[in-house]
Amino acid sequence: MIIDKKLDEYRRNIESLQAIDSLEVYRWLISLGEKLQEDPLSKVKCTGENKVDRCQFDLFVDMENNKFKAWSNAMVAGGYAYILLDIFNSSPMNEAKKITVEHFKKIKMDELLTMNRKTGFYQMIEIMIRKVQNVGN
View 1 (tube, rainbow, N blue to C red):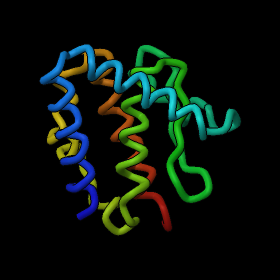
View 2 (view 1 turned 30 degrees about the vertical axis):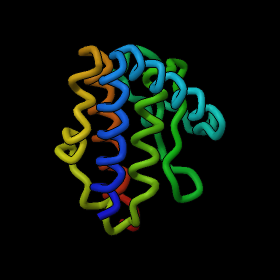
View 3 (view 1 turned 90 degrees about the vertical axis):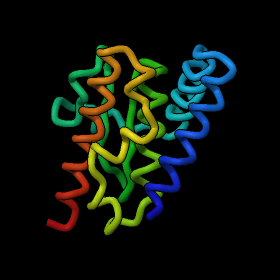
View 4 (view 1 turned 135 degrees about the vertical axis):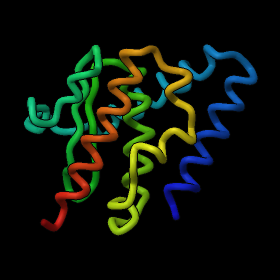
């Protein structure tokens, strides 16, 4: 499955950066958060229904043009959002419908993030899983 390859890729990146310095992981997440802003979720989709409300900053996710997009005003949250978008958008729909929260424990992001960021990370996954399940229904 593509998700397993993507998760392994991100896990290796995180482990390599942690071996240098734990702050390197945050620098990397911030750089991914900046990349997220290159093609963000449109403002009209930044609604309460699409808000990751367990994130301490504004973070929104929804599908536009048959792919996930997100917007955040926080770079670290934007970084993990970028990772989640990449994983979900790289997976064919039949694989994406099989994604579970458990898949994401492989990259050990929960060991890196503060409690508030971790709850936002997992809520975003749950929102994306729910939206994928509703595609075609």
